[in-house]
Image 1 (spheres, each protein chain N blue to C red):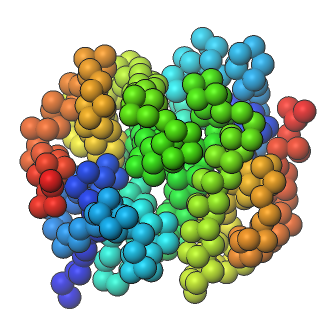
Image 2 (cartoon, each protein chain N blue to C red):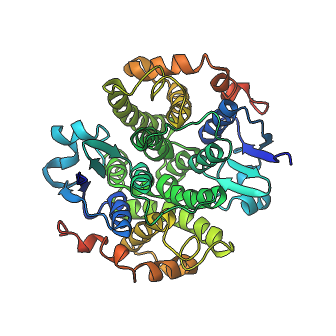
Length: 218
Length: 218
């Protein structure tokens, strides 16, 4: 049986960007179903999409009738179901290091500057454009400063975050660096991260997943 | 060789609470090293702790000389190194469901109301006590509303989030419900979550991990 695989995505979503990279690394080509986060008051809030994901967040993956949400869970699932090439090292210590880097992005940087939070800051706190950018830069800066220290001083860091092949850590780091650029942060503040980005973007799997290279890009 | 295991913890930290539950479920007894998040301007910012975790966040686990940070990564690590009893189902679909529930707490609810974010809202946006509580209730409410739908309508939900034994999902859900109570939210809004909580808290592994039952509790 051929796998039925569909990804609900939006070109600018950082979490969808991660899943697109993971799919590309594994040579998986899901059908792309576009959900526009701004049109029609946000298509992720439609009754139809809520049936699929009550969290009303992007991305969601549907594989042979099963829906998986949350980019971390989706990518761990893909790594279990399509194990080649693996996105996690084989040793528990290495796996923990890679997961902790991904989690630092997923839990401590990205949740603070996604769309719904910026919309809430504007609506409830009257935060203007400048205040919202300051907010984003603060959390991105704190998180990437820590990741730079973690990566710069570790013998486990190679061409990528962990040794010389892409892992879950890079899948999460690269979209976050893209977001840092969007709020005009200078990546030379994090030389190790910038070096890893320059390596990663030479790989078609990362490059093809960039927001501007999606069919729904504006 | 006997395992050397130490957990850097703070009684009120929701992320440390998760790791305490996981350790209890597995019958692991790490040495508890207390880091007070408010005293001395926050002991997590000390030079000594920064060497261990440049993110300056709690918890961190040290196992035979290896440091693991991020509660998700720590608990996946513990589940790999001390596999009995498992905190994830064996099938990839079940594992993805359990991880997605944990991630919904870890990525979409908790990061918005942890201490450093509340401190920033106060300092930079002049948010008073009431505005900060409104902020917390908003994100906790949105996240738990979605989890109630995910859990109430799934045949995979049992006495716990996934079937009838505790998993990673419960390890993340129970501390988040504790935080909802702290901002005086009425858990009857989420009958399925409240039912799972009442089951979980009858287990010593969850009960012993509660903030008020820690040696550093105030």
